[in-house]
Length: 106
Image (cartoon, rainbow, N blue to C red; front, side, top):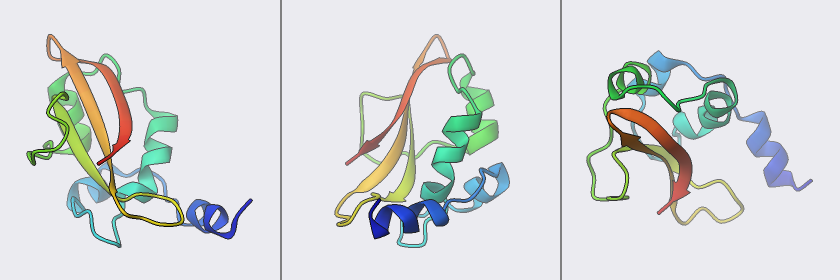
């Protein structure tokens, strides 16, 4: 296991909805990137309504990234040795219910 992998795992924090919503910034001290693994391990977003997702994660990012998705959340700088891009949580809805979600890089 590399030094970076160990460092990244140590910096992870449990998902907290209040902290997530209060930290939409994608800067170098982004809290969301540190919570995303816990969120995805403990919660299945599939089947949730848009209102439920917004209650949990706040309003979706409205920037121009990932036009094929209905909801987009900036997580922070991509994890890895060289962080060039940002990581995002992208969500696709059908009839106002989550049918697909994943993390993506821009």
